[in-house]
Length: 414
Ligand code: SF4
Image (cartoon, rainbow, N blue to C red; front, side, top):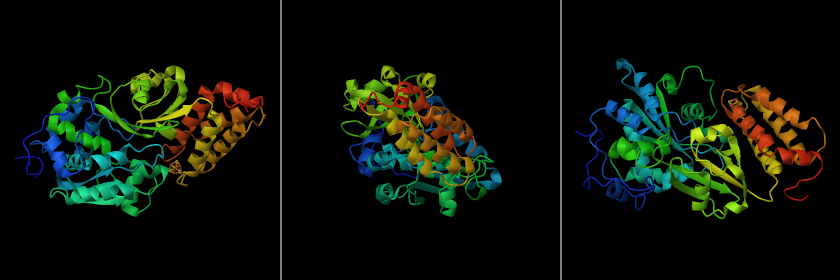
């Protein structure tokens, strides 16, 4: 008996080789999906899948990098025998982060892997209600994919609004439950009390696609690419000052310079790279050999996040670029927490003054003071992420800040 009620249409397919896994199918249709990956294997119990995910070392691709097996096990354990079927599973494809496009590309190119992962997660935590949450443009691809198969008809599609915090897990739950994508105060974890107080698993769509691959081909195969710390592959959104923005799939732990080169970026033009998106950390050009891994990025205060690399080219004023980002982030508060509502725009204003070469000697200290004031003071991590980004700007571009204070910008010559 198979875990899923899915009739095999082709014999089991060979496991993908190399670093093209999530994008290995010839197209987004169900036929292409089955031809490349074969049907889901006959896993007979949820514990077996959790064991396999643990052995694979798969971590969440939405940004937090939490071990996938642990998150799924937590939602499963929160479901008492009386609550069987009470749990909710939500596939999260919302990319509020403007620099990220990997989930959108995945839903267009491999929607059936995401659906497989969603169905597996639902069965693992005994969920009755299953949702897929993404931008309207992406839901169209998923709807088409669902119409191609019988086992996915129970999946309910929900549109994610186009706001920065719409993909935060508790905002996802609020959006589906109340129609307002704003984070909630974290009391009990969502795995215990999420949607309508039911155990709720919110899992990023790339993570779900990886779950589908591990379920088919096993943890041993999963670890045949990537490093011991960063097994498997991951999708990376490459953007900023690049010839062509896009998404590529790379082995875990691939150095940043190698990823950029694969994307056609001339490394001699790179001044710095923002790793992890608008809540991320700058990596100077001198550190581009750093592998995209949590352990290797840690000394720089950076993390892999949702796999975003934004290139800043030589000749561009980093402070002006950063002030623009901080200004945007200040507008993206969900307006629930005072330090976030007031502190982020204030921080952005002061950084803009630095960018405008205001020679007030207290500006940098004021940015740092505001960053300290907002950190840890929100219901979600939006203030923390914004403060981290702004402080990284002051640190990595310290010379620029000094030059601006003296009334010129060495990078632009102005
Ligand atoms: S910290 Fe900001 S974005 Fe987060 S919930 Fe509070 S007001 Fe909203």
